[in-house]
Image (cartoon, rainbow, N blue to C red):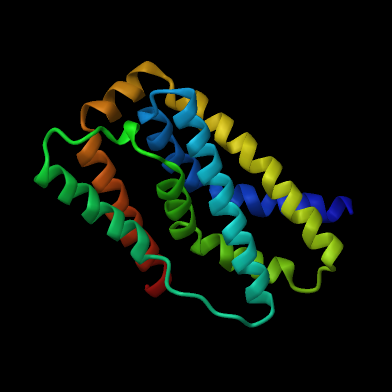
Length: 182
């Protein structure tokens, strides 16, 4: 059991360092506790989906290429900026779906690590790994929120909100495709 917990911690940390940086962008733009909770819920939803996809992958089921999701979000950000300069700031939107989609799209490495990790584990061990992932998601969200509240970082992100967000989505999409196909 201890070995399973250690494997889960190492796998989660190794595959979610980049996701912590993505979380910083979201938390830096949140303007209320409600928005913070939407981001946290989105993180949990995204990690739960990645875990479920990985468990399904153990049983030979396939899924769609996830690298297109951040590109779609980047196009949406630029389109929103071009259509309406007075549009509501990103911080006034519901964050849950966007955060879950970005977490999911950025999770190719998660799935690539989790599927081999999950092979050979019993249902009880998979439940334990899932529980560890849920606990670590909370810790990651808390850490991302605390770092994002650093005044200089927050001012830099908020000063160029739409462009930073679109750039992040396009960069994430390119990173996912390069990692997958190069």
